Length: 77
Image (cartoon, rainbow, N blue to C red; front, side, top):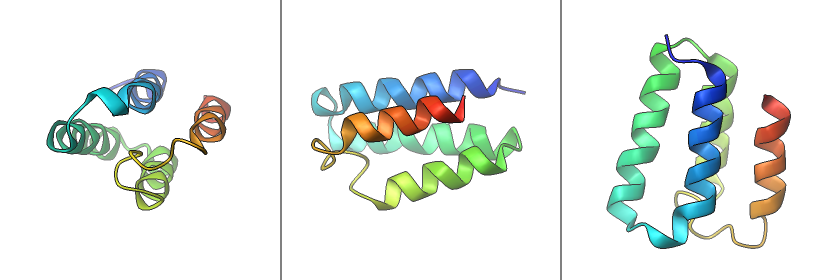
């Protein structure tokens, strides 16, 4: 079982580093986080990840909204 705080930290790292990662690598990392969340039975976290994913192509187009999303993720902790 993966701790929820670790998944949230991984999400924050993805948000902060997305401009340095290629789209394919970003997709792999994002899918890995979703799989870990799903197998760890974090339904709320999995739902939030899905909602965030649908707001843009793996956060790549969320430069303006990025600080708000990071704050939302911090509130989940």
